[in-house]
Image (tube, rainbow over all chains, first blue to last red; front, side):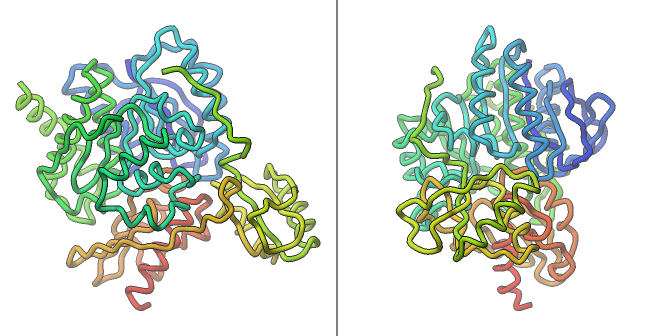
Length: 287
Length: 175
């Protein structure tokens, strides 16, 4: 079973741990609902839709309300340090949480206390904390976009906001940024870089690229990176090898976007509704 | 892969507030402490060559909220920089993509997209701090002139990056 840890942009959303379902455009967990706009709810919605195709149970989630003050995230970090060690998941994805190096390290230690070490995926704020902590190589997969990759490539930057200009200028040189991230040990075993072309890379170099279908508007749509992370989480959680999961997820996410006829104003839920069709098609192609 | 203890002796997720006068440091310290921030007063690192002999260390990620708190009390630091690399500056490069009817501006990891005709914010993407979905919820669907500013309701460096994208979009739309 897979687990996802992240936040809901609502201060009143309580700290909850349990299985998550999707009802219309809301995720539901232990009697609480949150709309799927972007962020962790979008990741979970994509993972749920993908899990349905794969015949997998609903994902488990650790969620808390946080609007950027960090109070909710710190409660969730604390909860994870107390409960993760006794949990039994084959995959854990850490997502939108206030980056905090000290708490990150404590959660990572808790994950390593689990009887069987799960596959560890990080994205968004938790990935920022992972990089800052110097523990990136401990993770199995990071899913940055181009701006976040530049941050991983900049060994001095404590947050994407402080990425140095000469590195940001290298936007069109994704392979160089990937090499630089690995050279400074600021990348996970695998990187799935989301962008106009998606890259799957490891320390040895680029393993694969996915560039079709190409819909430029996808970059502007909030949540498309979250859905990609959700799909790859579901595939890895279902037992597919990480590198294959990443390529299948990249292709399925693009296809789901394509089926939604995306424009820069498209809402992410329109894309999520096409994930089952897209994923089934990609899995069929693979056979 | 096992976890390794990694430490270079600096708190990489902390920032430094630099002030002109010690009296401002004292005022800022008591204000921030009274509001519950985990801060400490210390001597400036050698890279800092301006300001007085004391600086305040604060949680860097929450820079936007800390600066807003100080601004409300009319306390103005002359610099806010990362502890790990005090010479780093906030991002000042913008990537712009024209989709015809829509214009997208990216600052660091944050992207803001606007309908050029109505000036309505149609999407916000990128970012990883928890205020990004919150900001999107409050800004998407509103015009540039009506939408709340990230600097007013955001809290983190992602919110700060979105503010810069917002200002650049404002400039490009000649408002």
